[in-house]
Image 1: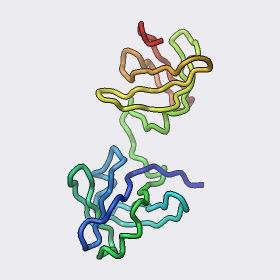
Image 2: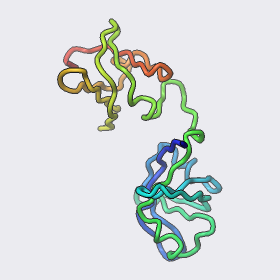
Image 3: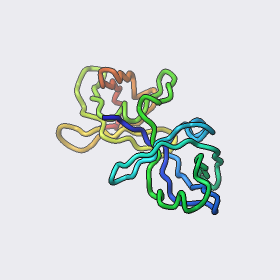
Image 4: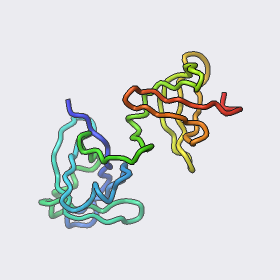
Length: 171
């Protein structure tokens, strides 16, 4: 079964010439919405898919206005409102060292530098300056780990293991 990464969501039409408004859900919109890129449109419930080629795209009021090749009027695109734009996991952009995709971090086991198991990363929050990993503990309340160099010592996505230094006040 093919695994997908979200690129955006088609939320509305734009004008009458087949353009659509897309809320971006990718860190690489310049690459994903570039002319000639191939995206897969997926219905959120039926999982029906359709491959599309981007003809043009531009940023407009925090959304992308995208035109797909072969869709030249509003009637061609209106039925796809609410559908999701995705790419296959094989089309992931290579990240620099020390950077990770969310799906690589969620599910990792968190241990202290002394080897004590704290729990498993269940969610990633992005409140501002840095991400925060939500760790589900075997017993007790969830633990919030700020993703900063002083706390996160090592991330091994192959072994699904994160080593942290617990600063005073984190627990």
